[in-house]
Length: 449
Image (tube, rainbow, N blue to C red; front, side, top):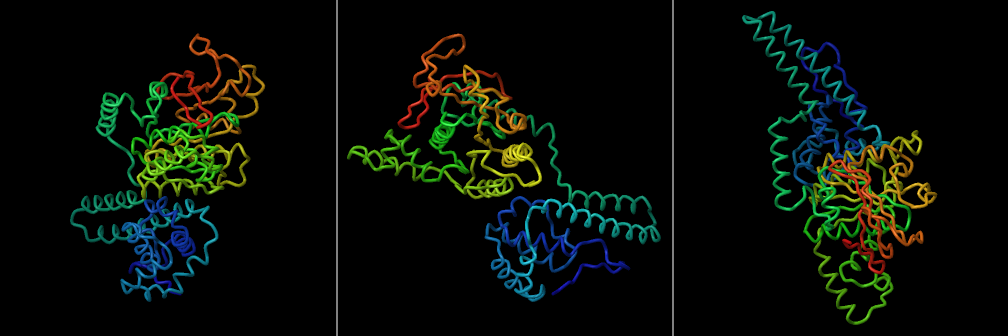
């Protein structure tokens, strides 16, 4: 196994580094390509001390930058094409990087340590060069300025600038006002006038929590708004942990065709309905919807997959069904801490990808104990952090399911038959209010009241 290093001539002893951590990071990048979009921006060849690791990382970065798959074979082929494969110990040594990998759970910690070792080495290098230059300097201020510049450059390599000027934010706000003038709302059109008016559409980078008790229409409402967004030719990503992709598409076919979803599923169709279904299948085959129905996901996997989905398909909205079916990374945390980690992770995804994220959530049984059955923020199941992380919280309640005959909206009493109460309980962009919507159970369709 090759252990060549980039040791500098003035080094009397080996500079700070960790071969094990470097190999583990390279191994993760080779083995779990879904991690690359998350970590590539935090890495650089200069952060690696061992020359072999620098060379292999260069191959990984080249493949990623050229939108090619990254795995052992593609990296090996890239190294062979550059006549560098034997320099790093051959294909056998590349494979050994992945053999030593157990889990990517500590990747963030490893990268921090990698950064620290890099800065230590840079400090040693800059210090040595200062000593040498000061002994020979005609202009000491020039030497000190050069050292200061080198220190700043080393730090900038690690701490990528994320600050923005006032001009940046003023320009973005002017664009928002322009969109309001053109479209009537800042974000993506939800398809519902009452909701657009209240929350300004699905706004970047908001986390919207859609919550309800079972059988109140969470998934149906999510699919309705997905359908409305797709009809605007806007790409949407969906992570469905509860229902299969086939079940979701079956409901979308029902929404589009107007045929009962149970009739479509059981193929109980008339000739006219078959023609309608064929037209819907043709229409929906062209919409930019991308579904991942992996039944169990942790928040790290969701973040990686969502990043890839944005990069690959350009999604402008993401839906997750639903939070309580996900798991966190910290296995030592209790369930409340785990849900906090998940909700915070969803908000980070929204900000990193600059898209609205709609996450479905269950409510606690406390709703059932109240006479009016109206959900409250305190009912968000297992964590108060969901409320804290969310930019908007929307509750659904179907009075029919509780044998409630009438509901009161804005001081008016209306019959509750076929009505779903949509309660906007938190709204960072405006007021909180409740709006009624018509619900057609046969096709799971929501309509403005």
